[in-house]
Length: 48
Image (cartoon, rainbow, N blue to C red; front, side):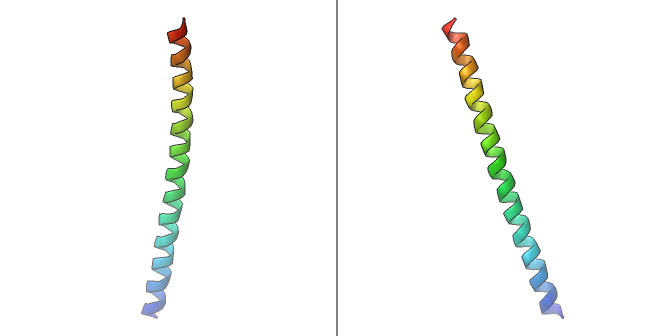
């Protein structure tokens, strides 16, 4: 019984870690997109 509880707890923890990793990847992608846009707008301002 205790072993089953431990097992289910660890799988939930692993899933949570996986989910957090996915979230971090998404956030990084968003940040990269924002940075690219920012650079583009800065480049336009410098050209003027």
